[in-house]
Structure formats: structure tokens, C-alpha cells
Length: 117
Image (cartoon, rainbow, N blue to C red; front, side):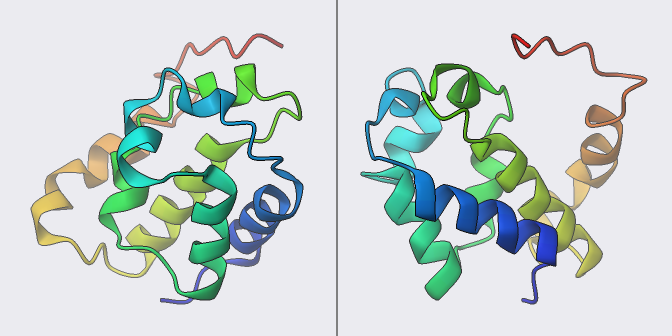
């Protein structure tokens, strides 16, 4: 899988700047299930890649960014991974049904997310 420059840059920003304080993990069942440390998860993504199910397991709620002292955007990185996977043909057949959901749920028309700005 060839990820876009945007995706790589988002992942590098997190891998290089995350202090592993784990505040983002306190209320996030996704992060609790898929990693011991978000910095290491993004380092793994950059060196080995991740199973496609990982970015699709994030709820994209933005809570991680709200509680992060550095305001790192893990949700945006996972969304970028999803978008690249869709462009590459959405390799998970069991997720084919969510393709339209992904397009619509990230549309400004159907989103009313207040990320605490």
C-alpha cells in the first residue's frame, strides 16, 4: 500500500512528537485494544504498516485531540489512512458497505462536530 504524502506527514508528526503520556488512551477503547502506546503505533505504521482494520476501528470522535497536550490529530491520521485505502480499492471486502458511509460521514453537509476549538 502506498500512502499519500498527507498521511505519511500526519503519522510522522504523531510519531515524532507524541510524548506517550497516554491521555488519549484513557477513554478510547480503540486505542486500548490496538496499542500500548500511540507513539509506537504510528512508528509501526511508518516502518511496517498496519492491518487495514486498525484505521477503520477508530471512531474518529476527536477526543484524542481534545485531551492531547500537544493537540496531535490521531483521528485525522486514521481518516487519511482510510481515504488512501479507499483510493487503493478498499482491500477489506467485509468493509465494502461502509465506503459510502465514509464519504458521507466526513462531508461537511452531514457533520456537526465541535472539536473544542
